[in-house]
Image (cartoon, rainbow, N blue to C red; front, side, top):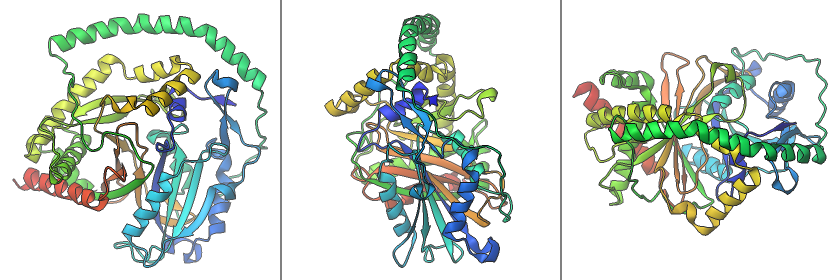
Length: 473
């Protein structure tokens, strides 16, 4: 058994009916490269059964500490059944992009069952009318709870499921799997010991944090660091419904890199933030709702040390970036966002990128769960605005991948929505081959963004305008 960290447990405690906290990804495969030109559902089951021992995510489920006196545990599920987690479905005819996104939206809206390992996989056939795909492709939707992984650990999990050639590797193991013995007495004993440690840990946290906050205040006063004091409210702030929409647009990676090169010091992330800012600007302007001042994007940052790269779960900090939606000119917006990103990185570094992790480790699980649910039920989560949207980067594979011998031809990722933030962007890079693309996938509350195809058009137009102005202006 393994106890969840405070940050991992936060995704459990904050989960509500309308706010499931899982992440998702849709990958599309061309089965013509598989042996015999076809992948059967039983082939997928066999591959997963053969590799189930390579990751604890497959078979472990949540076990709560009695009375909520400590953070929950992961324990190997004695009743684990692979066929419960892997489902086989098909799109209705004709089977185009819109129908795929509608299906994924509905499946992504549903929370994962808490009494099972927190993941599900859907093998989706019937994609023959999806433009740009080879014939007889199939898609795989994978849902995994955020408590079990973040974007960085998701990349490691992806490598377990795939091969580097069409030949499927078979893994031999001498390990004999046994489910964990769950002892409530042992969990309560550890919770009792942890409770005695909390005051000292809190004292140490305050002692270490106080001088950091003091220096941070000095740097903001002398304006060597800037804070974002005012946050605008948009249609994406408010109570989140239980219904979701998803969309995705892909862009040429080499073009994005060329745009980056036109602004000294700019990064790929700066370019993608500029595209997001332009899309939000266009979308809100079309509703006559564009605020006069800048919107703010929350950008998760991986805070793992080199020694922690193989660790599971979540190790993320957060930085807020003003995405300068008040600037119409796309190149001027890119220059401004680069400056804002540098300031946000410096601010996060000065504050301490692991501060969020330290805080969640300090707060007892039961208290955190009650506080988060009380805030949601009383409307306190909508009272303050921290971000207008989230933009996070998910690293794609650097090599060509195969699943059961089928060539991976496309991939997109979808995130969870947070209280008071009904729009989530994921930037996914796929540079396996010379073509190379980088995509922006969105997950949104359907009531806040009822027209996802139009928002995708806004993303495309934002990219087109930036590319024209930066490369041909």
